[in-house]
Image (tube, rainbow, N blue to C red; front, side, top):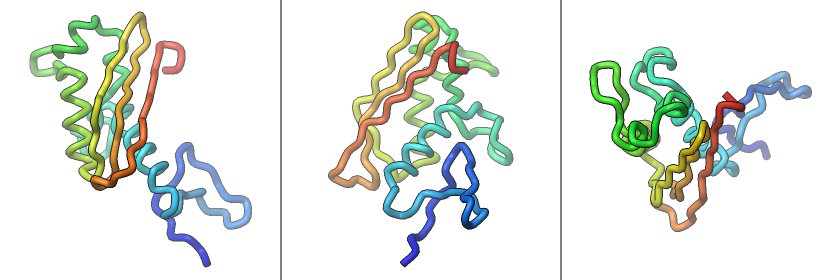
Amino acid sequence: MPTNKVAVKFPLQIDDETANFIAFGTEELEQVVRQNIKMVLLTNPGERIFDDNFGVGLRKYLFLQPQQIEAGIPGSNGMPPLRNAIIAQLANYLPYVVIRNLQLNFNENTLSVRFEFFINDSAASSIFDLTISEVNI
């Protein structure tokens, strides 16, 4: 019996047998949530068509001073504190994800985000860990 498909896998790949994009099935829900979290964190605000508010833009925080990452940059083109941006974006765009123990680590051109997440308040938790650096931009 075929499984229901939930979301297309990124980077996009074509299935040689069906000529369709390879997709996650319903049994791979945690992987879909991980992919969605990564998209929210790495997408720059204004980059998503029809939704200028979507995305944290994690890369734009990469070269800021630690106090700017923690406190944000005020002004009309400023940036909110990274912790606040992550919490607000995930709450807005992935309301089915509950995050706990958000940890931010930053040093010389490397930025790491790590937290525990639950899907729909389930008892099972997973750890999300993403590190970006000037090398992998």
